[in-house]
Length: 243
Image 1 (tube, helix red, strand yellow):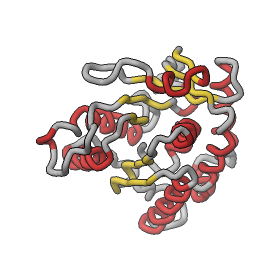
Image 2 (cartoon, rainbow, N blue to C red):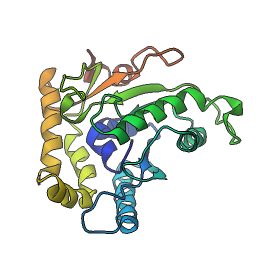
Image 3 (cartoon, rainbow, N blue to C red):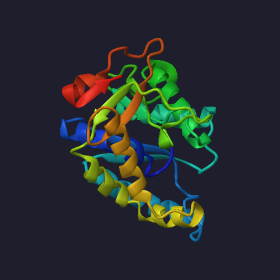
């Protein structure tokens, strides 16, 4: 994902379910979160946000990684793609959840492109000098929901897969609550004090669309070389729905 707290907002409930099912979960951000304050210097808030991200990840036994790019300056270029490829090379991901390329924020869009490119490239032996983890292959790739479920033109996102997070919604909210700095930031910058409530409402709205208490929505990338079957639907069975 792009920033600390994005994973909790957009796919936290699904990550909780994957961890409970025995998956090894890694939460990675491209950026430091260094612009996520109106009062703390960049270096200070970056350290604070890294700690918040690690605490949230630890709640589900996940690891946290950061490519240490600057907020607002995430770009698809050779140095950043190299960092993403090297991270994939160390982990050998089988499933990747990332930002939609229809998202409102360019850091998110660029992150989605980096995640896609790294997935396609990382298992190629000559792409970098790090050893290839056994079983490395082009991973399943899903784009997470967007803020408010709309694209940059205000059109509803066409959901491909819903995952039932009714039983994990409040744990998702507790993970998000670890990011204490962002409640302060959003209140000052956006004029809102409903950091947790807005996420809870959106999950419930997605759930209502398919008759559940709460859900997270995804669109699967099915371009050439990427897996075609719906892994999330297969993992969660009746607790998911391919739209």
